[in-house]
Image 1 (cartoon, protein in one colour):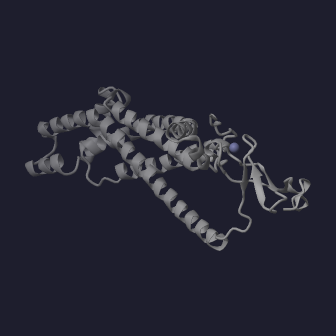
Image 2: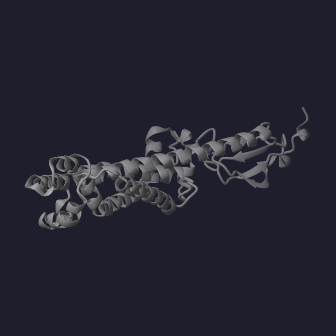
Image 3: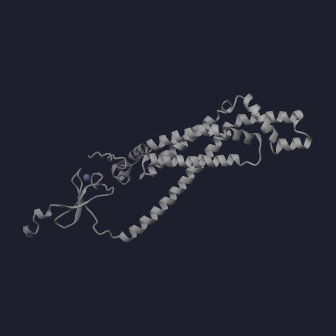
Length: 294
Ligand SMILES: [Zn+2]
């Protein structure tokens, strides 16, 4: 073996000018090698990266074997990912629609009982005409004359819309707060490419869409009874409060979501396995927590 075959100088790695542009863990200590210089090592002429934490060298693949298929898979996954996000957007809208409808239904419960009583008494007083007419008015369609002439007086004497809110609705709002907080966390983590404010705008837009569907559903009833009349009457007041709850709780979720996701990742995964999820840190300009070397 001739010593001159392996001159010391030529085995010194030289920078290639490229750097690592994806999350990649050091095989020894788990440090994230993103941003490190790619070097060409002189002995075997291989391209390598050196871990700045522990000095370990790792060889890189210079000619990716899967390049053609990698591109196809990437496009397929991108398409599936977008479909999945659209599905979650529909799920978000649907859950908010249900909770919005529920809040109006529960909040107007007390008023619908009052309206039903007042309307029943009005029919019993003989205002409704013949027996058959009274039956129709009681069980099929509320009398339009009563809604126009009597209902405003009943509403005033009961103290108005706000005083008639059935406060059982607070339970619906609590549940809704939890669901919207969850959606805030979900969308802030899933839309890592976007700013947090944008994730919040997405949820607010989906909420507005859901509330619009609630409005359509509550206005389109063709069968008018005291329940529907109470829901239509209270819709805007209850929905205004509901929207404040939605915006506040989804905002809290959006602005604490990534922090929560990082905490869960740190609790659940050892340092090296966190590296593929490094974007949760790097997206917010943070460094992955350094593993403790033994
Ligand atoms: Zn290392």
